[in-house]
Image 1 (cartoon, helix red, strand yellow):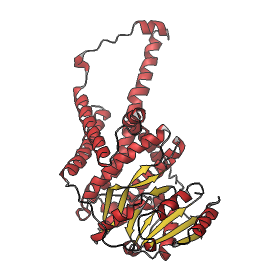
Image 2 (cartoon, rainbow, N blue to C red):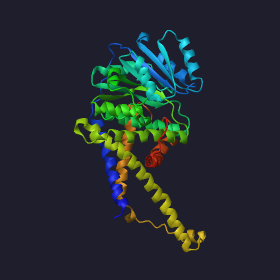
Image 3 (tube, rainbow, N blue to C red):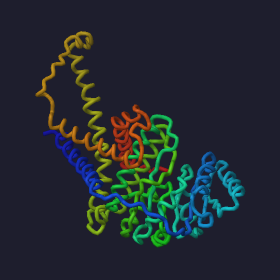
Image 4 (cartoon, helix red, strand yellow):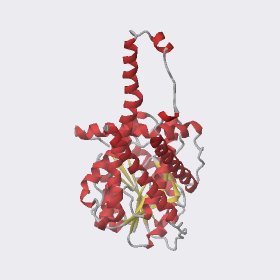
Length: 415
């Protein structure tokens, strides 16, 4: 028995187990009734910005455009050592909208987590939210999110993040990725298994974050580290699908690689930092299921890309060259003697059945994700849809190979 015959069944079992588990969890979970806001607490909106002169006005327009009492918004913009005209643009915006309580903090470039902590020092809100400078939020967001804090154990409520103005095929396939991933997060929310609170407009209970010591660098993923810390202290994180926040996605493979490298590397390193929580009953499904899955995801992605490259590229290439060498590289004689005789008994039906089951379950999840986020399956076109289904996770597998290299050689990624 080869190593491949041992590894592949394990990958099939793990992948199917988690996918079917989340699907059953979703089907078993009753749909929540929409909550209605009854009071308007003071909310601090923190906007960290670094070289965002082109998008910061769009961002701040969405903040002051929130359907929320003007006197209940405490807006804090942190200029994190920008080298462009971000500071001047912000100051002009503040002058033009002096009927809002908008403060500007200028600091040397120290990173987003420091910017958040400096803003929290002067934040007056009972709750606060961070809105990345390249993002914008729908008007009703706060009214939809704040009612979920009636449970004192809820420390964070998260919106659905969508790609803004997707243009190229790479951005369009990321639209599909976001929809599927946030649908999974909604399911995870029901079991309190969320391991990241993304930057665009997650709302936090301020006294909880203050008590836990604010944000940390968290391997350049402070939004992931704080989620692990909240889970460690038994707080709840809720994911919603009816609150839309829009953000820009990487438009080329280089930026896409560096972004996903940072995200996924941060997930591995944060799991390692909080490894004592793993398989501990007191941390519920988060410790028993979610943390191991974060580790497994990288291994599975790398294994799949290696096997695909070996069996579909390298091995056929070597065999082809060997066969050509037998006829002294007379390619025309080689083609003339090709035998494509196929027999139904030659197929590996075990693998075909497994693949069929995986495709069926995956398509079910994909369809449900679009239904519950109110998106059309073909919203980005047929070509991006097919590329996402057939090739996207192979691309992520390639990124995981880069992450493995970085971890082996201890290469740090800057923000």
